Length: 215
Image 1: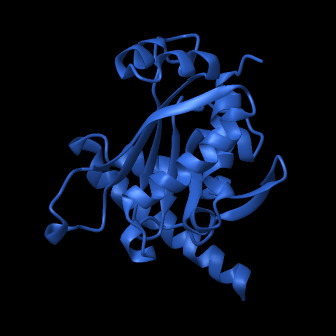
Image 2 (image 1 turned 180 degrees about the vertical axis):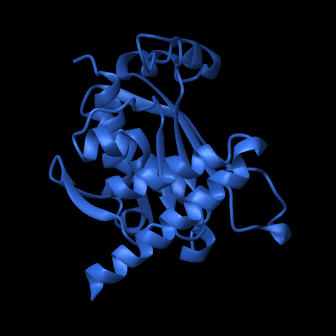
C-alpha cells in the first residue's frame, strides 16, 4: 500500500500520542491540527508542529529518552505498512548552553523510512539507505520527515479528540488563530509593534472568554 502524505502525517501523530507520557505533554497545532483534527480545509505543511507547556527536562525526560519513546511507536505504526524507520535524530533549536536556558525555542525531530525488504538488504550501508529512503511527498525529493516541538507555549485550552481510536490533544481553532497572529507579529520589524498591540488586545479578549466559560 502506497502511503499518501496525509497518511504519513497521521501515522506520526498517532505515534506521538500512543505514548502515555508524551500524550500528556504535547499538543498538535498548525495546519495539521486544522486538517486532521478539526476536518477543515487547510494548507497543512509537510512537517508537523507541536507545542508543550514546559521543557522535557521539567517532566524528567531527556531528549534522547523522548526520541527512544517515539522510535518505538513509529516502528509499530510504520511496520504495519511494511516500512522501517531509521536515521532518527533530535536536536535542540536553537542550540544553547544548558546553563543559559531561556523559556523559548524547542526541538526538531527527523527520521527517514524505507521498505522493509530494502532495509534488510542495505542495513549495513547507511549512505545507501539514506539515498534509497522513501520520498515523503510526490511534489518534492524530500526524504526526511520532520517534527517541530515548541517549548514553553500556552496549551491549557487544548482539547482532546479521537483520531482513529486514539485520543490526541490539539489546539482549538481559536488557539490556532492566535498562533498565526503571533507568527505574523514575528515576521518583520515594521509590523511587530502594531501587531503586538493587536495581539495583546486579542489575548485579553480570549482570557475574558475563557473566564466566562469557567464561571
